[in-house]
Length: 419
Image (cartoon, rainbow, N blue to C red; front, side):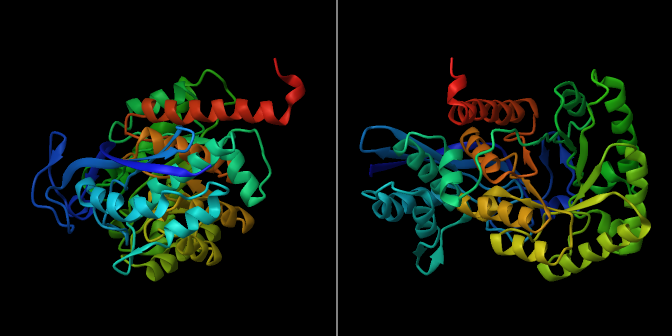
């Protein structure tokens, strides 16, 4: 089976691009938008509509494989590629990438993905968003050609065991961190609630008091609303580096506060993502390691998750090898081609560091469904419910794609049980 044509369609992602620098510097909310000028190159406003590009690969038999190019909400921050605007890239895809793919045989996914990932235009690699969407489409094309699921393609090509068991799903609340938490508890999300703690004054508090109150409320809320006493989700909160300025980037003080949060969480395991942002990979690794060591010295069970400055497969390897965190967020659009996501998860698990297959609210239904197959094949420790910030939509997309795929895998593994 070969690729006979490629179509590119500009679209909308499920959320927005936000200028993280401007927000951290105190940009004022005005309804859903922010007041003031943007602070990150490429932005024309602090918050602007998210964009995507759908890649449609037409195969010889007329079947169509799809992938969506998308970039994270906080594009251009933390060492990431710049803002992704569809109009700037559709001509490049049509004129340069399509000719490189049309006529390609779909014998295997990995070599195709690797070749595309290394494609240079004027000496530069393609934007991570482009590599992300193109590789999704290639993976589906190979699955269609071989009449199998994307999970099976990956397990076969990476010599991974085919395990028909779910991966824990992590719900994200957006700013509606109270009502969304209720929804997550009622639907028994495995991990919750993310909480979007991206502003010190309004969400965390200058002494951390607002965050402490929220964790305490959340732990009590889980106990109150759960219908099954055995339901014991992990609490995972992203603080976007904001504990650094609150506690003068002192690892001992940060660890002391995290210990208090752990006490407030009670019996529920607590994971804190991005406690600091040191504006560079090496200082980030060093500071996370100091915080992790300080927590261990206190006997705290609070775990930290790396996010900022861990953007590529090579970064994941370095953060893992340096043992500076308990879990790495593998932020799917930032890694470019999806084969890097699989390899990152496998590396983390092999070396005893948690693999959180994340991503962004600013993706699409197509990219989110593809990510389910990556997580199932490589056995991520958790997968983000995405896209959007509404919880229900992203959770439905990820949960249902996972259940459908597991049913198909069970049928493959246990053919005698077919009805």
